[in-house]
Structure formats: structure tokens, C-alpha cells
Length: 285
Image 1: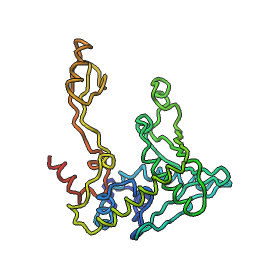
Image 2: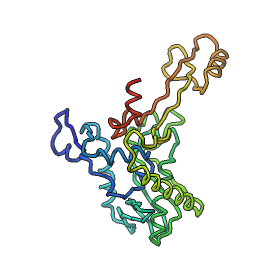
Image 3: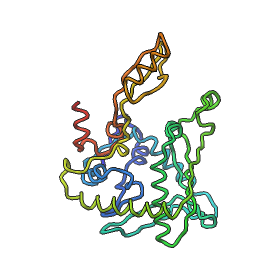
Image 4: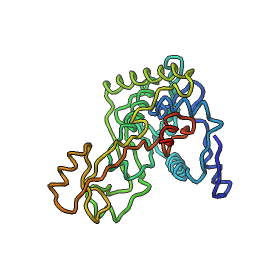
């Protein structure tokens, strides 16, 4: 992957944000399994031709720094251990940030936005944690809990004081218990995803299976009830009639505004979008 430097930033920064190939051949990481088949294969297939702007990767440096600092802390846990398990004709791997053997708990350090916490969608973290737990169990280590410790990079103390639904601390912890049922479901998901990836590897770019709405970070179209003089919506609806009816009950000064759906990852964050037929259709439209 090529790193451009349009702001003429120091070489040290450019080197710090240079991205190495994430997966070894025929190996899929726990985080890769959360991505779409199309994104995974296109990224690997066109790796040498992909480009990223150095200034766009500032938060990647922040995340790396957080991991490096916490990795150096001295405790009885083991840190940054890699686990690998054969699945079908491939391998699944994962690097566990920290594992507390005494309490059988996995810890993972994250840098995240306040928006993610307020949205309350941690399904990607749960899948990642369960994949780690599955890898450890296959290696003879039991896991009872997973805890994701997130540093909220855009936290505001003033908003925390005034907004009821705003995170009160710049540290947020998401945790869950690991069950035998969860591990069984995870094994099924991993095996199915790996086999799908193996099957699709030889497909032409435009014939690769499309990413799901979840994998594209799709925000569905909405109808927003607005109020004169207010920038944010009073309430969002999935259909126009419900929005119109609600606006009518609120009276004068309220109106309905259509908000088009958007695939956020495809437009702004997917590394291989220039080679993706779906992205080309979106930009053409």
C-alpha cells in the first residue's frame, strides 16, 4: 500500500502510518472475519496499488500508541500473544492484547468515538472477542469474560455535564460473559466465513459477493421531523407518513426532511473502494 503525503508531513510520521499487509497468505485474522468478503479479497488482491493519505491516518497512530503504552505495563497477564488455528484449507489468527489467566478474562484496548458508545452497537467487538475466546479454547485456555476498554478520543467534559445520554467518562468498558453456546455459534460462523472466502478467491473483482449492510456501515434512509431554528431532528422515522403525522401533531414550525441512505464505509473508509464495483456505482449516481 502506497502512502501519499500531500501535507508534506515529517518522514517519521509518514513511516509511523505506513500500513503493512494485515494477513499472511491463506490466513484470516479475527478482525478480518468481521469484514465483507469483497473488501477482504479486493484489499489483498490489489494491495500494491492501494493508496492512503498520511494525514488521514492520524487516529491509527493514536491507537498504536495506546497499545504500545499499555503493552509495557507490568502485571501477571500475558500481552500481545498470537494464536492461530487451522480452519478448512486456511488459518484463523488473532493477537490478544491481554489475557488474565487467573480470572480467565480477555482484555482488548480500543480507541473509539463517542458516537459509537451513544449508538450502543458493539456487535463487531463481541464477534472479535468471541473469536479470541475460541482461539484460546482451541489452544487449551479457558475464557469466561471479554472486556473491551475503549479510550474515547473525542470526549467532551462539558457535554458530559449537560447531556443525559452522553458518556460521563472518557473511558468506556464493554464486557460480556463467554458461554459454550456463544463459542459453538462462533465456530460455525468462522468455518462458514472461511469457506466462503476460499470459494470466492478466484472470482473476478465484479463477481465477488457484495458486502452486507452491516459490513458497509449502512445508514438507512430516514424521514426527519424538524423544527424551525433547530439543526438536529426532533425525531427520526423509517417512513414518510409516520413522520408527516407526527409533525402535524406538533403544530406550526415543524416540517419533514428526507435523509438519503448512505453506505458510510464504502464512501469514506474502505481501503479498496477504487477497485469496487459498488463504490463506482455510488459515485456515478
